[in-house]
Amino acid sequence: MADAVKERTRPPRRRRGGSTPRSLPYLLLAPAGLLMLGFIAYPMLSVLYYSLQDYNVTKPWRNGFAGLDNFRQILTDDPFFWDTLAFSARWVVVEVGLQLIFGLILALLINQTFIGRGLARALVFSPWAVSGVLTSTIWLLIYNPSTGVSRYLADAGIGEYGTSVLADTGTVFWGAVLAELWRGVPFFAILILADLQSVSKDLYEAASVDGAGRLRQFWHITLPHLKDAIVLSTLLRAVWEFNNVDLLYTLTNGGPAGVTTTLPLYVAQTGIEGNEFGYAAALTTVAFVILLFCSILYLRLSKFGGDDK
Amino acid sequence: MTTLALPRRAPRPGRSHDQPPRWQIYLPLGLYLLFTLIPFYWMLLFAFREPGSDSLVPWPITGQHFEKVWTERSFDTYFVNSLYVGIASMLMTMLVALTGGYALARFRFKLRMPFMLALLTSQFIPGALMLVPLFEIFRELRMLNSLWSVIIAETVFQLPLSMILISGFIRNVPVSLEEQAWVDGCSRLRAFLAIVLPLLRPGLIAVGSFAFVHSWNHFLFALMFLNAQDKQTIPVGLNTLIGSDSVDLGALAAGGVVAAVPVVIVFAFIQKWLITGFSAGAVKG
Image 1 (spheres, chains in turn cyan, green):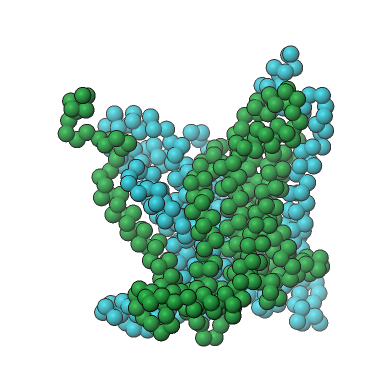
Image 2: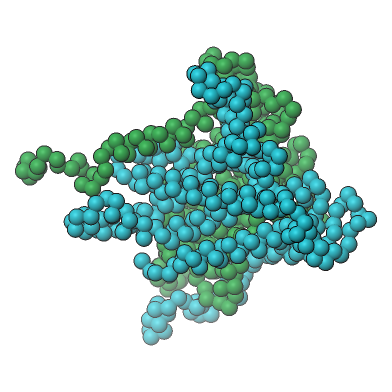
């Protein structure tokens, strides 16, 4: 009896009667563990290995140990690397920032009670389910200079005929940003809405009894409540936006003149099209280190999970 | 009777008195809806409009672009392949994440924290940057041009987040429920299937649909690992349409519609669960 009471007060370590062997958790984790060892850990190690090699399938006579040459070349002798890094940073900051702002506004709006809310939710969230390639498809149709939106605008006297947003180095950035924003905002809206629903209604009641307006309620109740969710979702999204190449690969393929090439896109082009596996592996390593460093810094600065709700 | 005594500005039922005026909801929401829907409309317009027409309504309506992508551009094959990849990786992700998530939620063991840490760290590993080593692995395994290379890769990259979410859901189910079943003589497996699993439904639907949509949409793995024409998936097919010398916009739009239909159906079905699923998973722990 005493045993049973004790067991209920803490997580059960094992079942009574000893029919749960100690190895059970390991057995349960084995499939996941093996998959991740084989297809994440091992490739990671092989990236590290290749990063120290000169490795190009099309030029086998050059292959061999290169030491830190690849890294030296990246850091001191590859201006395009710095260009892509700068573009990646700008891309991630602008995208995540705008997605967060619009996602937050959208979640707040859609959390209100009004007629047609269910339908509005479904419609507003729908681009979430759309892929990068499909987003590119849609926005290529929109940006198309001869039959796209700009043509109809020109018919109406706005802008010029033949405007090609994606071919102009001045407009391509915002063209791509808009396309990615279109499918990225729902991600934040969904996560923030989920978290909004756990805010206690009593807090708002109390605040409004005390005479706090809606803006102050938002600032002092809603935002602090959402903080952890915002920190975590911005981090996940930033990593995702940094790594994801689907959209830019198909929409602009890094162009025109390489101005929309992110670091991962550069890696993909170096590795896949250029066959420079060794150099691509070194770039991968550098990207991973930068990403991990920035993530840790971000979690530190935002004091994630610091104060309990 | 009491309602009569209230002042003129009596709140409508179901609205809290702190709600903003209606136009402050409808106006911004309406604008945002336009931003969301016009691109979809634009795609439908091109997909259903007769070639050469520049009308802003798809009338007279035509199905010829669909016929073209479906038969000439082999979207029929791509569709089946994508469906196969999507469903298989969804099932695999859910099964593996469920067993692993249960272990993480219900047991204390030495490797628990290191494993959790590995799951979190793996979130920072870009799938795109792993293409080359993964390509070599699948070549060694002689799995290139097999849909299973893509299924495994998709599963692996979705596992960490799915497992973290599912173990969170399981932790939200009180252990005492399971313990009662054990006392009643149920095995651990039966107790899990009969008691825990039904309670996990919203979470599992969210995670599963996430997995399906992801692998249906994912592009780079399929592009790299599948070269044979009859093994390609819809995103790769779309990319081929985008890249062809004289882009046939009607066919491209029709291909886009084919790519969108399944995810939109899944989405319409799960959108309610998505919010509840995430609110359950968002609970700290």
